[in-house]
Length: 450
Length: 158
Image (tube, rainbow over all chains, first blue to last red):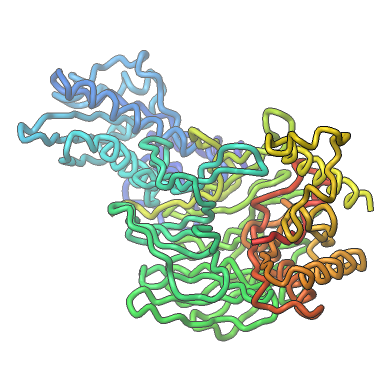
């Protein structure tokens, strides 16, 4: 696959344009241009030159330089781009600001795409960041955009710029202007301290949301990204809670006699779906956040948990052992018409529907290993992305192309294990650690920040 | 059998550690072992040392083996002896399961214990349940011996 891709790339390069798209059935674009087709598995990362966004000088120069570094880091981490070392660049950012690129100078350093940017102070405390993108081999301008924001939000601007570049060159929505909420873990394995923590998707702007006095599990974002639903053992009563990120306000959700857990928002943000366990039986309930009405959706004597809505809100995938072993099922949003989705060997859990709707990610246990996989909602196309002693809890980036999850690795002292966060492409390629101050588990990726 | 023996040793060690508290310094003639007389009747220590506070479950199971039933029969008698004692049954799972399934499984196990005690004549209002899933292993280690000790229901005096 890789070899074939590279050959096609070379052929496209000889034609003078960087058409990286491999789709043969799709009509050719009117004008061939640099483009990455990320639906085809492993592709050779696109060499891209990102020049400094430093402006005229002073504070903006530092911010501008930092912005271009964050843009480059985002694009590099996607596995689809290879930012080139600016030390080798022949044309200066100043020369690019005042005129056209000297394409031959950028071809000489191996760049196929070129990004230049500028940062200017507005005088009112805000700053303006603009950038331009060129197709080096074709020798043509592709895109230019401008953003104005307060100076302290420069990281968000950098992620927004990276998303624009990603979208222009792949045709897919970006996912860099997002956050991840997760459970930060510390202390010995038999007395683990667990806190909610939130960070940008690249690990920056990290902050703890809870103090660790109460055991907390499975945080998940609301579609508006301002609220988190999670499970807490506050007062030794394990229940599903709602946490408002801005106000810090927390409230218990619903009035259930038994333990509630495994919460997730509906795509419109109006409901939280969850499990309730009582007398040894676990069923799925939906709680309407506006009316606070609780609706029971399943009524099997088994364990029904891990519910996740389809992006249109019409269906729910969940896990159940009603058939004897833990498997995935899909039902209508009102609980009717449950149908078994998985029939493979082993056990399937933690299903989560892709924001694109095309796939459902899951954790699978087979033999002595855990694996992460995806399957189409019609039950076809099951694929394993990664497998090890223990991987669990997939969550989708908003573009449905990247997932985050956690993996237990042997702890340094040889006793017990410690959990770390990772990301991986839906193809199974480009697995990366997400660096966190403490151990981490139960990641949940936010939608794009509105 | 061996597992039960080990946990009992651990429990005795725990109690012995408690007994090193200064207020018991007067009882210096003993050989260091915890004695029946130093354990407050109806306490958690009493339950652990003289009755057995926990039962174990098979892989992905929540039914009670004969040995577990014998332990719970002793717990029933003990609870009848101390009618003012109320307890919480903690249900636990080993690490070889997904988080949410294990929460549900722990709740099943805790209820198996509760139901057995209630069937044995203990008033249901004296027995609460809580599941910790795989969050609080009793024993560290990623092997079958450790997992077997972590798949448990533990009776805790409130």
